[in-house]
Image (cartoon, rainbow, N blue to C red; front, side, top):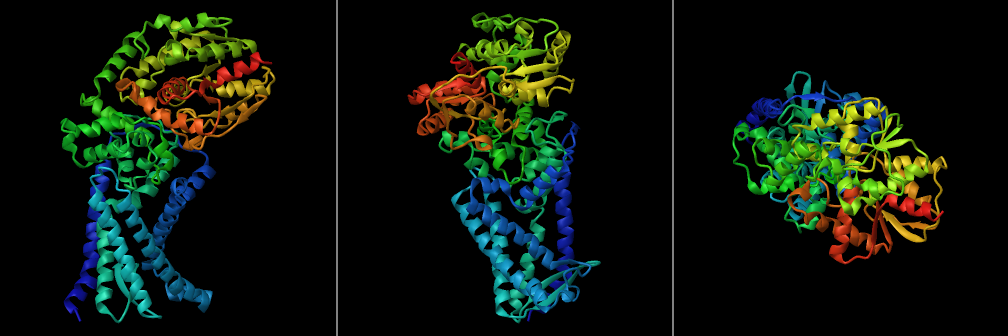
Length: 626
């Protein structure tokens, strides 16, 4: 019926498709190689965990399941159908041919060759339609690729619709075999309707051509990104040790974004600002812009709104938990801030914070010799810089200087004293751990802080450092070089002291809930110890918050956001206060000085009477009742 078109489609177009696909892949991969080198990383030696992540994250989309089971069902159906259909059509060296399946018997052969492809085609079509509807409802906020999204979904929807119609036109379809490459054949159903056959084949070829150029390239990059991230042990959400600029992995991760908008749906800042904040999307837009338009590397012509959004990110890693592509959103956000910092586009207050750390060795701009003043309020003041101590309590900037949370080190100090531990504090010799500079994209000068803190600890001969600040704890674990010093968060130590009967707990008649700090929970994996501590206190009724553990909401105090807007964290934290009030508890317990500060402000903002305490304060109260 269309001899010329048939000749072009069946004989010429496959090779044009192949050339364009290869060209597209080179175009994509060349962008990755513009990235800087990663200086060092650690390979994941846990093979079982690695395989579990590959199965659950690549094939079963565990992260989407956490958000919506309905969306998860259609996403899994859609992607598994794509793989199955591709395997059904692309047959390397005759694999899956009817002849090779004949030994299974006629019933099994019919299921594999006819029944299963028909079912998968229908599932594929329905899933594509549902995802299209979802995209119309949940538009990726201010995402530049929204047209690309519709093109991608409509293309696969048309392929599914035409394929399904062809399947149902004949009970026993004929097959059209195209020699695609030596040893590889492309197999498509052929019906008496030549027009449908041609449309189906052309759509399939357009799909392959579009794949490396459009958003559907995430079908390739997402599995690759997850495999690389898991194999290199990059799961802890920390910043990579790399040269200045975006790394090859940064570019790969940006290309792995599916524009599903799940990061926006789960972002605490997006909700607090009624949708004005563009979530991780702003970070992704910047990285993609630099990758595709290298000239931006030497200009400051970047969208001002995009810059604001990047610096409003709390870097809480909640979007990372739900991201189906496994993107390390925290590391990418830090890289984006580093880039903007190099272009002198960081907020002015960031420069003030960096100057404070560089000159005064703390982020609050106070004389560092006052760092140990909280110790004067202790029942039994801790020793300062005492050599031969087994433990060093690294207090952190905020708890050292902020009156609102100085009760935390006082409580920790009293617990350690009553437990009979041989410990000391550094006072003025304790310098900022470097965390505010790292997450602000201002790594210059961090190495000096690191070297000083390690040197001081080693001079004292201590074998263990205790932290009540999750951010300090995370920074020492992930950014400081391995030096043989054991690192413990105070929840880990207190929990062990209880198990060893070193401290005695008394009765507290109260309903209590616990909030998981981002740097302690999602980024450090400490969920069990705080809950065991609370449940060991007699008389307490423990009630979990609706959003807990890895799904926990950020308090609002992370990401250096308070440096540019001191009222913004309380706006975000109000959601947790309201959630705690709804649960009917008297105490909101956390294990982070910044969480406590933020929640206290948020409680005042919403008029809540809930009592916000650190877990060390709760334990000390219990000890005093013993």
